Image 1: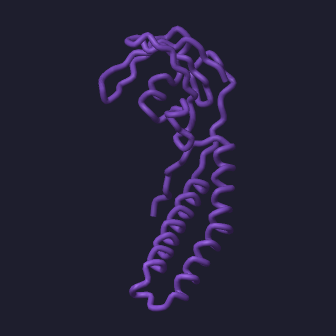
Image 2: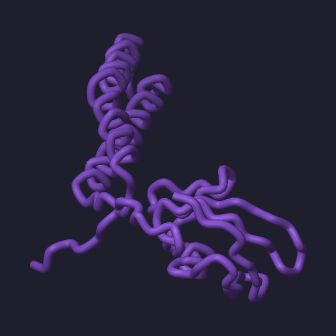
Length: 159
């Protein structure tokens, strides 16, 4: 059987966060859910016991989340930001100007597990991240988005 080649790129900090969250789920949260099930069982007939059903559903969600985190941790690929500041790469803080709107926007290029567009963290796998990757200050890049091709000028790159 072929080995699963899925890798999840993330920073060492994000990997540590995942490990801490997994530890919390396996220790504190798992005990809380077990306690909910135990308490719900004490209410009697399980066939008509909504508290028991809810607790079992919660347990299923928890086990699913634990499995997801275990997979992320097992297949994590730690990304290090390169020391280069003349090209956009993972870990770069990039100031761009939207040419059409003439607005400056600042983004940080991160691995897919850390992406949070609302906080300006753009995945290197996203169309925007891929569009900027490897470019230098002064370059104009085309980003293929659902609404069409957007153009940005790279104004500043920081690590």
